[in-house]
Image 1 (cartoon, one colour):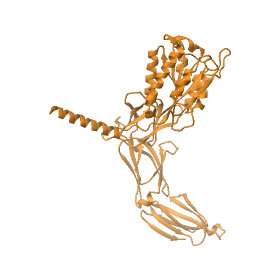
Image 2: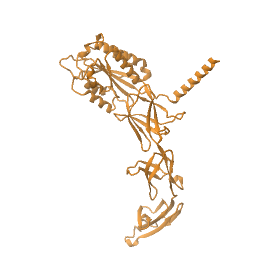
Image 3: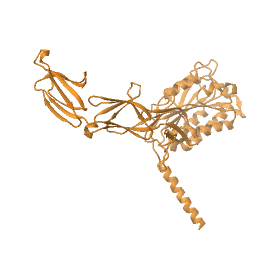
Image 4: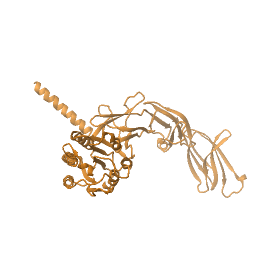
Length: 462
């Protein structure tokens, strides 16, 4: 009986896990292209770990290739090889001794092994030049993840700054932050390599293998992320907003998601590449930002973004279909720039705060310092307009004006090209001042005064 109960519990758990996987599947993996840049300068002929440094590093590179080969199809990987310091003996130094030996393509790992077995170190260390040339090693691809793994035992020996070149490649969106494995590097020189990217100090083969394992894990795995959109009390209850994740250096959009709550009422899990540092934009109104997000591999990353929201509803009484065409300009209080343009008679979420509204009725209505509060709907009631039809007997020049005591405000200019006009006017006092086109004297001016009430229907022949 106990065994049957245990089987039942395990079966239920398995179904639950399967449902969670279906609800939170990892996105399709993009093509990942790994360019290995290998140091074959003369210093790689020195002894290390009981063997020639080049031979030992090559063996460890083959271990890396073995790891990648087992997952190549599943992970959608392509691998290429660039080598420097292997063509021109020194002296004299050849600072352009760098060559793409194996281009990107399917099933290149065997070709890389074969090429590495035919190479003998003999030249200098043109790291900056090799990084610069690597830009052309990656064929154009908008959706690819481009990664460099540099394996070296020394510092730049030619002109150029490897750190500046690496940063430029990242800012241009050519590559993600490179990996550098420093083979038996003097600890005092580490800072000169760390600035290029993710640096691993391989003082021995154990540390080299640890670097390989870390790199393979980061290159091939996405990490889970939960974005909490917080209300004014710090609770993650806000949702249904677009989120865009941008690479911090290049500004390129890496991911876009619609924020969602899962069946348990918690922010849904998404999956992101751990290789980028991200700037997050939550497309609320106004947008909310969180910059320089560094994700951790192997843990569930939680990102908290304050995004407290309420609802604005500009409610115009009367004909709903006609009112839907009326726009409302939204501005942050005291700031003249337009923040958003919404349709009247539509409920719109806004970040909590104060807003100035310009409602494009006729005449326009201005409402200042409208307060939007957490999870509440703020309604601005606008009276129903009246419909006014004006027919000129003859083509005329003229102007429709709103009247406030002795203040007249222009609303619309008439031209002789048209004699029939229809307006939806807010309740108030108006006048039309006009002159027929064929009459050339100001004394021929005509004037019509009228009042509009909510729901009126006025037809006037002038």
